[in-house]
Length: 521
Image 1 (cartoon, helix red, strand yellow):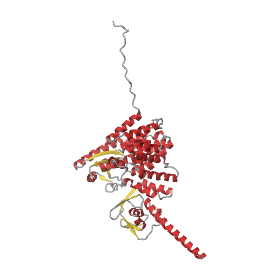
Image 2 (image 1 turned 60 degrees about the vertical axis):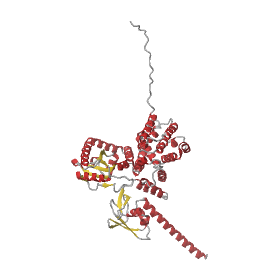
Image 3 (image 1 turned 90 degrees about the horizontal axis):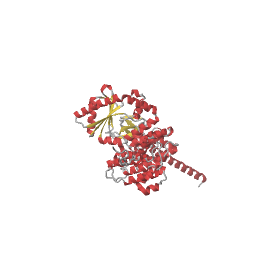
Image 4 (image 1 turned 180 degrees about the vertical axis):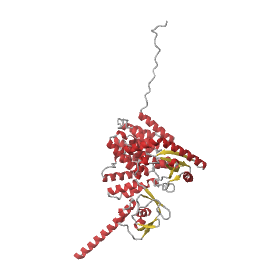
């Protein structure tokens, strides 16, 4: 019989591994994400920025209760999702160190060089802007923002990534701060993303801001979408299969995505058409992505042969791209069961640009600093900077900026077929100045679609505009009451100021001559 006092087997010590620190884990995932599209990139500068920011943000916490470093790392993650370059992601990691710690700009320059410092300093200045302050300070804030964006577009890319992550965690702030930040996002940052062609970023910013600014409307739309989701998905699957079969029959290669429209997009439609969500029948959209422009038009023909197109809803943004270089064919048709739906047709390249905008260019710009000088997406920024330097009135600056920042465009044509894109409500005078300042100055009349119209008439999509000029004619001060574009307004004011100055000099000279004669001098 074995003794009960026999010794127990020797215990083996098994170390308990604690889960990785969430901040370290996030940074490790960031490096892995970058390696996917920059496999040969030296990430030593990124690692240095990570340790530098971690040291100075140590002990700081977010309103969510997370360590503060989660935020800059997530900003860098968003920039990596955009496939931005290393400088942008280093800036993302460092973007709050000057604002929220004891670090100075000179320290950043010493550790990371001039290029990173310019971007960090630019983002810091944007962070300090108060876009909802008194009008004069608000105008000055925007002036600084425009200048920072033109100097290096990566500044606004980092700021957009910063805003995206802040919006994702907005629920931890007070209602007052939530509303202010959400409104700023909807009125400033989402339109900037739109002007830079970044459809994906714009959509997320709009939906998140809408959720906080109009919670009841947002919930109503989400409920309507959810209540129709099953039937909508069944309908989209039916449509997709039909379209795939039709395109295959015609030998058109394509991939087809079905989607339900975004809440804020639906809300805009309700407001624009003054209808309720129950009256929206085209919550669904189909996107056809094919291999060539030729096949885009061929696919449009297939769709229109299969279902009846809705008049006035066909838009060709391939032949006439939007100012942010967005290209696609849009149509709305009456599908099976009398249900309407929207179709977008584009190439893979058009789709990439529509989703990523200016960020798409960074994938192909190794070794180059900043965007190309002729990049059309930031031409509007340079234009804004040119005229804002001369504009003194803050109220006028802000009202004009909003026309340029939130444009609803009309596409007009010269008699020779050149496209002139103008904001909604633009007049023949705006058209004339868009051609050339001399054409604007000497404009005495206009024909729209071969008919003479008043100079204050609003132009519409597809109008063919002919400007009648008279040498020696000068712009009228009355034009300022109805022109819409900053270019026209600025050019008119410049000439009027020169004319009034010349008149004042002439009057003063005549007065002096009269006094001299009276005094016998």
